[in-house]
Length: 151
Image (cartoon, rainbow, N blue to C red):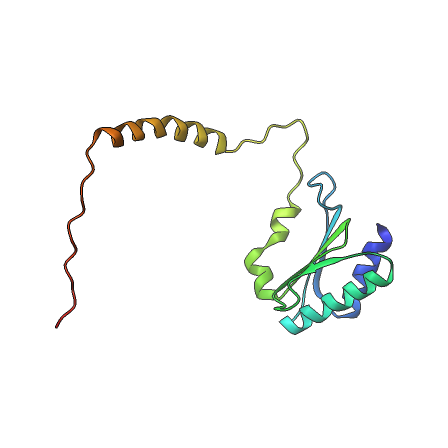
């Protein structure tokens, strides 16, 4: 994996990528071991960096998958153990994915609290009562709407 990361970082450096950031994902997710995020000054530059990187990865025997080269706002390159995100600066600021992935990983035996479980229980309790009320009340017909057009 070290040579893969070096190939990616060298390609991005050669193409003058800005704000290059490498994030270790081990213990945070199983989708990859490393994420590399970089910016280009324009959509054209982002697309060119992506094309160069994909070409170099294929030359080293990897089979990268990529999305977004056509528009150049955000290009995602999946190189197996490493995922590369290339952004225009405005798009990178808007999505701010660094903030999500740089957070420390929770230990495996620590329960993660979410409001989802509580929300599902309360919604399940309320649903039957609502259906019972709908069955008892007779259906009302809507009054015809008056036209607001002037002649």
